[in-house]
Amino acid sequence: MLSIKAGWSVLSLQAGYIVLNWSGSPLSRIQSCSVVSIGRGPPITRRWTIAQPDSSLPAIYSSGRQGLDELGHQPAKPPTSTAPPKQQAMELRELGATGLRVSPVGFGASPLGNVFGDIPRDVARATVRRALDLGINFFDTSPYYGGTVSESVLGDCLRCAAVPRDAFVLATKCGRYKDGFDFSAARVTRSIDESLARLGLDYVDILHCHDIEFTNLDQIVSETIPALQKIKESGKARFIGITGLPLSIFAYVLDRVPPGSVDLVLSYCHYGINDTALLDSLPYLKSKGVGVITASPLAMGLLTDNGPPEWHPAPEQLKLACRAAAEHCRKKGKPITKLAMKYSLMNNEISTVLVGMNSPEQVEENVAAALELSTSGIDEELLREVEEILEPVKNLTWPSGI
Image (tube, rainbow, N blue to C red; front, side, top):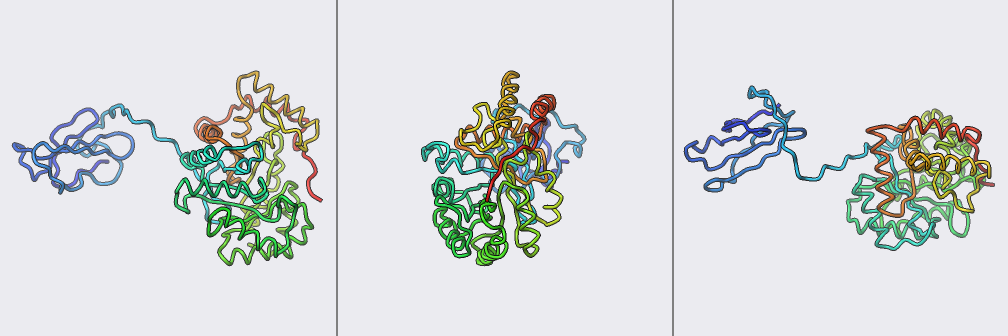
């Protein structure tokens, strides 16, 4: 209801508006009046001064649901606005027990390391700026991506965006580098300082052990995680995570470290149309109080029209099936990338889905998929058809680690 405050009186009612007068001005000598538009959202007040300006006019309406019921009238249809419609916002999700709330679409910054081709700096800055403008607040990088280039470029892009530090959640990693793997306490302790210098930050929100299957997992338990806990205590990282491809690595570590030592896991290529193996691990991870991040909703290029890069480790049978699924979608005039992105976003127990982005257009496409999912859902018929094509290779993966 719109509750008119004392001192104001209704002069007239017009379509979508109430014209009000301040009682301090005799109606015969109106000095000021206001028009309040009535419609969806808060009332919009426009004030005109007819004679002398009066900047001391008090508030017109009280807070609450707007309407004309208290005045004995039904609200009229609001006038058509010429302003552009407000961008619909993605609904943020809780990130485990961290207290952080993140966008369901996460910005994978490996492309900023020129991993998939050179990206001009102005394009990189525009891409990050567009992501922030459209509500993406989670950014993921690593010193491994482009041999530290991704961290440096992402840091530059965030500085150029000039947003407050609490406007984004940033994760980086340690243990995997251009010259190999090193999960020793000394190396990861030095690594966070190097990452902070490249990013131009005082702290990161999340520090992950990167692809832990490439070392002895007992080292992660007895040496790396304790070192990361000290980093967390120093304030250089707020939360600790572990990443990798084989799902078994998560339980191995979580069952052997003190409760609360690991806040998050990042799994990739195990929650998409072709592979949903992560689902079986979600109850266990939840019981451990661990938040879940997924990456590679397009299965590292398998679920795209162009197909995967030559180096993709997937078995040929899986590549052929994904190619057939992509071709089926293309014949129906619907890109498989949108279907795959929507599918990966459907499970709210997964806090955010990381996808690499290298242009403002890619950002817009991914955010559009998330917003479309929230308003009109997924194409169930097309999804069933694609799942049938991929059924023979369901959850087929590839080896990773030592």
